[in-house]
Image 1 (cartoon, rainbow, N blue to C red):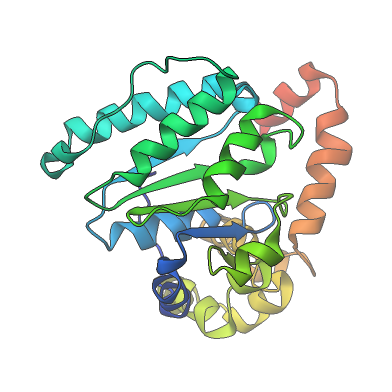
Image 2: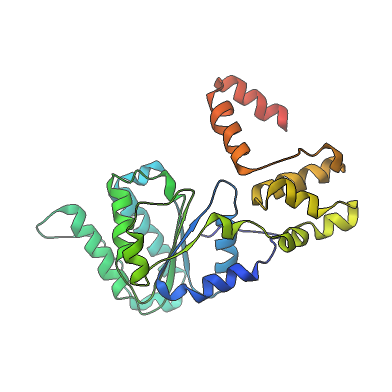
Length: 266
């Protein structure tokens, strides 16, 4: 199921972009850590009536069979929970000669090609897949195919190795990038509307500190809620700094020290 997102700021400009490009069949949302990719996608899909299968990818899905099985399990659940899905059949086995991998790809392709009702599949955390392995190849295969009643969202921190020129030329892909996802000044004011009235804080200053980075807005919101003091905020709080701390400092610490830091932070 899609993640349950509460108390989000509606972002009509991004919703409009997504609505205008749904017909392309594939929407790639690329942004740095904590830039609101999942929040935006879940919020947008919540406004529609299309059944959604949300797949959070892990390194296990580098093996196409693991991804294939997860897709089938999800599609079976989707079918059971959707009365209008009686038109399509989920393949249980693939028989015949030829390369196993291709037969599995073609089985999924046949299923999606026969859909009578529209469904949406979200592949979250695409960046965890190794682009040289079969799991990524399966997603690329589905992306490069065209299905009238399938909408796919691909959420990633990095640009995947697709043939963007050909996909865009064939109107098969729309890309929402990091700069699009960043909050504008108006959206930042809306994000802090209630807090600003309660604590007399300056959303303009927060925008300057974060550059509209969604993760920074959330961190500052929680800090102000507890400290009730803007004077203690850092001069700059960006995703680059966040990534540097997590990758270059935190991840290299001894596990016992990481555990201590997590416990002490609470």
